[in-house]
Image (cartoon, rainbow, N blue to C red; front, side, top):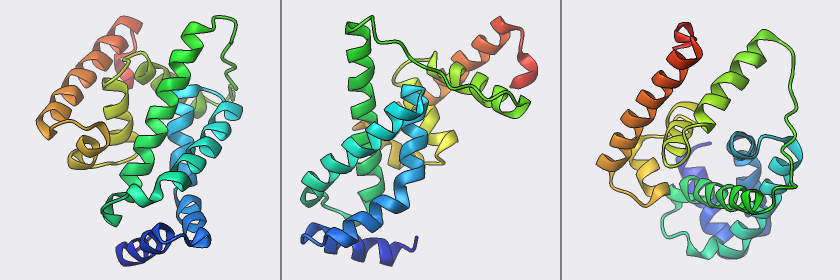
Length: 176
């Protein structure tokens, strides 16, 4: 999506143009789903997360000060929502996470990588997810996480080191 087109859509959405807002959401839907799934681990909860984040974004669109940061603002809402859901799960032990597992080698490797990243916990999970899975720049991750860029770089380094240890402990150094 072009930067100018994005800015125009955000400006229209801020003025109450619902069609512009839903075009923006449609353009971000896959990315939002990937992030939600990386936290919540199942399709139903991930789709529900997209609905809730869409609602929250619609209610708060006027808070976006710079149209260039719409994407990072939206991702921030998703990460906060997912974190809240995970906290609820911990308080409600009867809720069981359903893993929908595909049986191809490629998907098994993806599941292993996602499991490894999830094992890191925050903030490491978030920075690695955004940097390497969603291809975000350090400055954008810093914005999403309300943290200085140097802190994000430190978290990335520590997170990658934790991943390396995770794979070595699993005997899977061939994955790294």
